[in-house]
Length: 92
Image (cartoon, rainbow, N blue to C red; front, side, top):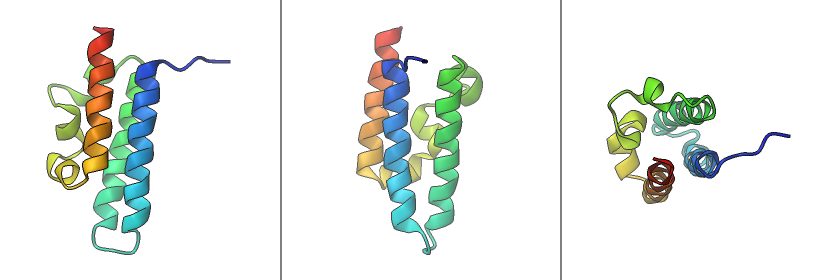
């Protein structure tokens, strides 16, 4: 059984928060944008699992990678990003 790191857990919580926003946006004009962000978040989680985060996001922040405007409009997601960044900083 594979043990998840705290960073992976934080990334998983971020994906879950985005997924809740996506579900709430289904059937609206915001739905496709939320789906794009959700796909990006899954890519972020996979990159963390592969220890390839820098390869995935480049020089962008997590918010920039996901879409800063969208993140700013979703406070819970912004909070989960802050938690993820804090975990990433603890690793370094």
